Length: 441
Ligand SMILES: [Zn+2]
View (tube, rainbow, N blue to C red):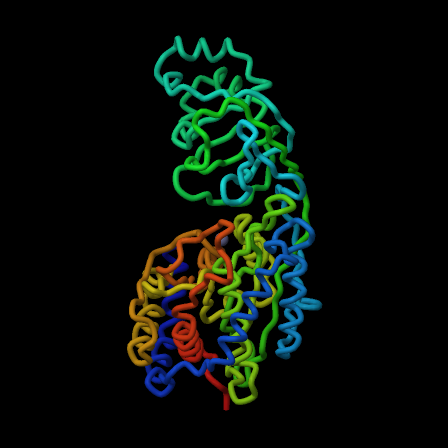
């Protein structure tokens, strides 16, 4: 790791100097016009539309999103990095394509708002009495004996999130007995936050917003269709603009276009901030550099990754099957969650690639872009990570503040503020220019 980092820094220094030279000359107000922001809104509205199904693995949502990006890449005149811009790969993924219903004492709870499926939930149809887990089972053998004597197969086990986190403290025989329950409901304090799993439990598991759960409920009826797809084929969408002076060197912009897909027939996760916003920024940068007067000196690649939400699957696949030489990447800017900005911009790996972050700070000061520009260390939380693990100077940009919607049904385009979008565009453009994307001679 130390060796990688040393090599990366020595490669980055001349570029940082270039950025310093170019910084003042390039600093100017962001050129995005009102028309451009209308286009940004259109992009985000399209990616979050119901017929893209949350860009997941039900009803071909991710394929529809990829086809939309393919069309945009084609219209912009990007060169494909793979046939028809598609780099295919497969992943195991658990999906919720059909019914998603939950009733407590006959009263329906709302999918998405009041309950979600646990990522690894199995399918099932259960009607049975509530069995509330007693916290005494964690402390008292007598309580555990009582639990073991209670048949659970027809019951719905209801437990708090804190209890769920402690289940592994119980003796294996007790854990095995709890696993025989017809279904499991975990009561979650605060908001529900969904994610994706690549495996499936034998029975239904739901997460229920604690405030929406009737404490006195006696009976539960739930129906959940879950389907595990062991080898679902999806794709990265990848294009580039050849450099006019040094086409063998690359500046890379990446953003994942997938999201969490559907929770049953009636509900889906729109993923406006996560990550229609980053994809919209990627497309705006592509449109900028595709103009004849802005053609870059170095090649600039645009990588729209799939299956990020399933564990950085698309970007991991890319670094294992690179369509451009990874050592030729001068810098990679990964864009994920750019739809807010009231509290400025965060740069993950800014503390790892200090020269790059210092250059960003100079450009931000010169251009007066975002009020707050902060740096973090390494984190495996988006698609920059597989690249920086391989020594590529990869930074992950996300805006802070504004809406709290995240991995839930409220992450909608209508309420996305896009507060810092123009400012971040200007900063990224100057940053990429300084890294070699400046117009060639
Ligand atoms: Zn996400």
